[in-house]
Amino acid sequence: MRAKKSLGQNFLMHARIAERIALTAKLASDAVVLEIGPGTGMLTRELLKLAGKVIALEADKELFEKLQADFADEIAEKRLELIYGDIRVWDFEMYLNSRYSVKDGASDYQVVANIPYYLTGEIFRKFLEAENQPSSMTLLVQKEVADRIVGNPERSRGARGGKESILSLSVKAYGTPKREFLVPRGAFTPAPNVDSAVLTIRDISRKNFATKRQEKQFFKLLHAGFAHKRKFVRKNLLEAGLSAGDIPEKARAEDLPLSTWLGLCR
Image (cartoon, rainbow, N blue to C red; front, side):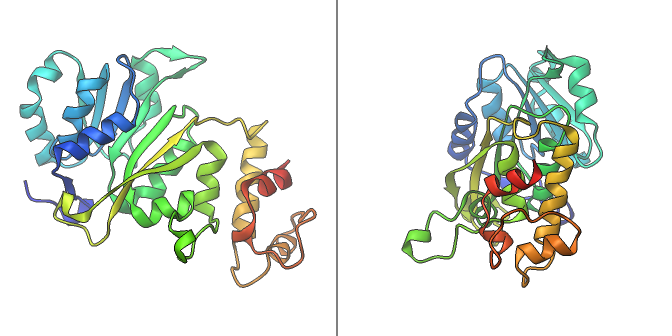
């Protein structure tokens, strides 16, 4: 199958890397896994070895039809549900809650995927801010994005890192991110222009927010604080009519840890 640039397709072609991703997700034998963009099915095949059920959402009609043929047995056995659709508009919460086991009012599921890189931020928001959050996410993303979220592990060798961003703080507010391992660009076809990394987000919850209002206030503060990068964060917040608490006069938004933002929020 030829990759479609319009869909941001870069097919993972190394079975051992796919196996390692599936193992990194730490799936229970009865786990329900949601895979976004199964592509050629390389990762799907490994997920099926470990999980109880895989739900794979594919937006490419040609690939969807090929996957139907390639995984006909698994579909017949009801271990794989293959869905033709776009993650940006698919109501996954309604779908999951109508079909799978419910714990404390929500379906228990995990997200594992090699996602289109241009949808990375949107996918984080869609699942982390969802009413029905996954228990964990294991995603193949750009190395630069993974480093921005968890902090650059090469910082001690002189590389710039450790700064926060709206993306990193948004992810950390809901769970614990970790860069698991690197995946070279040569592992894909076509090869992207950047190296990739497997990022996990575990222990996903809303434990940092006592109310829905507090959650909304947190993001209001973040966007106001990062609004003008050349200005100090205190000035940004005060100009937006928000409290700056005891933030130092010359602190910048990227220098403040999650705990400071949560303290302001509360």
